[in-house]
Image 1 (spheres, rainbow, N blue to C red):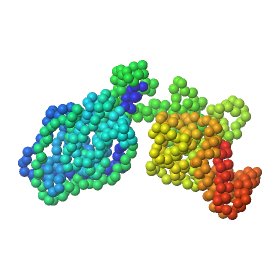
Image 2 (image 1 turned 45 degrees about the vertical axis):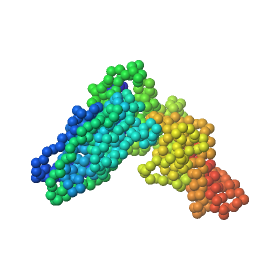
Image 3 (image 1 turned 60 degrees about the vertical axis):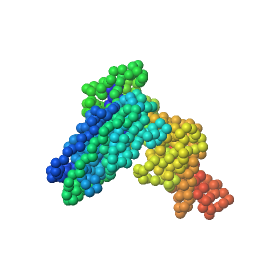
Image 4 (image 1 turned 90 degrees about the vertical axis):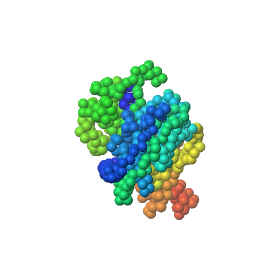
Length: 575
């Protein structure tokens, strides 16, 4: 258990720059080669000069790193900006119409010029001094992450100042953090070059005050022809394709993991190396890649079994192993072990979720009706080995999306920012958002609604939306009065049926055609003769004395009929 936990503690949340088709890496190699060739040419033709030395690292009190050899042990990078070897460090820099020597002993993100983006990340360390200092120049972001928290932009009270915007491209400056409240905690540093621009870090130190150091002498100017100057400037001005920035997991900055004595996190025991769960059998895996390869190894059947069981659960309402989150001794045994292994073998042939889903939904099992054989019902009342379709209520998000679709305001677009939670008068408490979102979420799908831990969407919560603090493989399915009240009174439902009523009433044709359309849109079938007659009578009653010529009355009448339809069990449940 602790070996697996040690794996997770080797990884960190990171915003990384993806490079589709390797075009950015190719542009970097081209720019790097051009810069190095031009630097060699200029330095070969220059007169003898004395290289100015850097300050003495030993004189820096509390030094963590002086970047004498990039990159020091434990440091890691993502993206294409930062130099990863001494050969990649720039030797010259262009300042206006002159060329000077680049400073020594730095971590630099201008290996291939100023246009590339990337992140430099330090190893983790224990905070044992009240303040942390760094000497830095350039344009980008420097941040300190304490205990893995990225809340500096969300909670100024606890994390104010952890993220510093650096805007000093001409000269080095010392940036300091007050970490006195975090003594004994673990932290690591990030330097983010978002491009265009650059960041260069000279040293990092801890102590009560910034260390006093002797600055290096000004680097001499190197004589270069106008042609060489232009070529050097051109070599470092390559414009690569824009990276695709995504939230990801990056290796590096490992946290040490210890056995917890009697399970108490405050009583650490021996340090544990990364490893695997003993029941999976193998030797320790050195990194996350080895762990992933072991999980997907053909000799490990558990991964495929768990995945196909979850897919079966979502399609049929019940997994072959009913306890989708527990394949252990405390979980339920598979109702059909042979079927589970058959599907796992098919899945492992190509690891294609889409292909397996297609096979399942085209199967005769998925096409079964809810009418089961009487004998089968007696033998298998829980339908563990499917002999009929199971009646299931729509999950919360699907129900909401169906209502938004009927309203005519459905927005099928993908991506974009989340929609703020709609706040009711009863949603009070600490951390309440400052503003409320629209009741129908601007027509966006439920997946694009913001998730507020202490202020979940009221409608979704009524229909068993899981708490967002943990993963849930199998949701609870309740049937309580609050759900019926939500379908009667929720602002979302009223907005949906009002929009539906306006849309239907604006269509040409008789009531019978409109009623038939509403049945098809909501229940997926035409109405029976008795249902058609009852709905027509309902519409006449809703119109009342105002008459059919009043558009508002027409829309309200069809909205009332729509409200009846969405409150039917047939709308709420899959058959």
